[in-house]
Length: 303
Picture 1 (tube, rainbow, N blue to C red):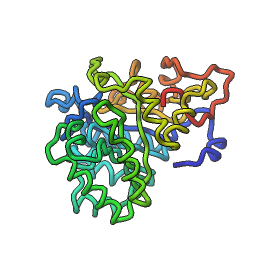
Picture 2 (cartoon, rainbow, N blue to C red):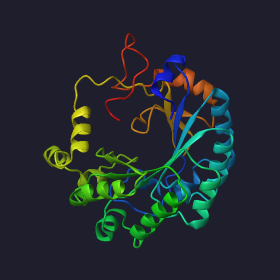
Picture 3 (cartoon, rainbow, N blue to C red):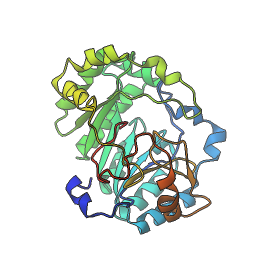
Picture 4 (cartoon, rainbow, N blue to C red):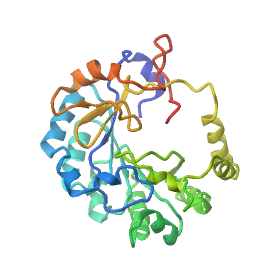
């Protein structure tokens, strides 16, 4: 990623980094997933076609984009994934891939090694197969995920292991963290934030830990506790989404971030420059900084 110090040389509004949810289709049905409600044949048919994605990518690159995160759903579930990925990497973008890992085979890992990403982030929601597959609802998914981690590390592809704290896996979070530490070069991140489903459903929150349970979990590990204390500060800088970072959904909607989709600009109907410079500045966000605040901030309240 571009070092924070370098950002001071950018204009106040500049399309530095994009998180692109290229599909909502997935081979798993994770209980807390907020995109799975659109993992249906009808919704998939509405997703951007390959040519549309490449055409929008050209616009992003032309506008100066440097970093691209490909997420989903499961990005590798798109049959054209490597057309998209190869195009982005070959055009010089720093590409991060969010994946559940279960579709990474020897040949997929070889392809990624031949044209390496900036980083791959794999979700590991349990150290035991029982817990992992209770979350993913996919038989055999635990073994496939661990195999993907092995394949990527064997090829020296930068890897981050992450998990979401849930009622189903809270007793294995520290074991997942310890496992990530045992991998050597792999990093670890714990995500605690659950979101409503894209159709407004509250299903994921059935598996949310209470504030007390989260505190109890975080206090068990110095790294987790330090991060929890940092997030709980009241002087965190306001949100800068839409200034240098933005989100695109599976249907070509340009938005401030993946957590704020209340307003959207249709990239199928208009240009990226028009959307980024004309529409995004007017989109509402309760975490936005006031006009007098510095425009370059390292993080937002809701990240």
